[in-house]
Amino acid sequence: MVTVENHIGKISVTENYLTELIRHAVCDCFGVADVCNVSTFRSAVSSLTGGRLFKRKGVRVRTDDKGGLVIDLHIKVTYGTNISAAVSSITHKVTFTIEECVGIDVSKVNVYVDDMNY
Image 1 (cartoon, rainbow, N blue to C red):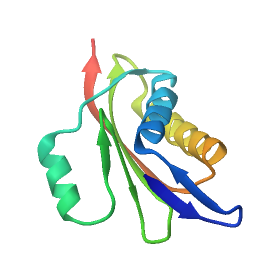
Image 2: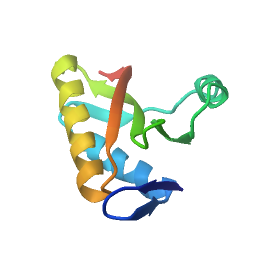
Image 3: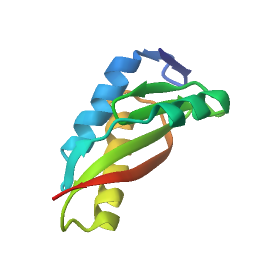
């Protein structure tokens, strides 16, 4: 459960809702074939380095010191996609979706292209 207090009041969001909201926003972007699984090793390392961590298929969300969200996405793109344009589109769409639907600021969105769909 992510809980953030701001000028509106106290906001609590379940991790399932947050990760599914992000996954749907990412999968609707042009050039994204799928969301990849996050490896167990990466999950273990990031959980040891601190911060709250939610892991689900291809989406990791954690809070930073200022109460914002840091989102890590692992995606598969379709062959021939301009990766730079796709990543820029994903970053903007995820940030807009989270801030509009949930009201929590997004500090950073990290997009990792793990695979390509031929």
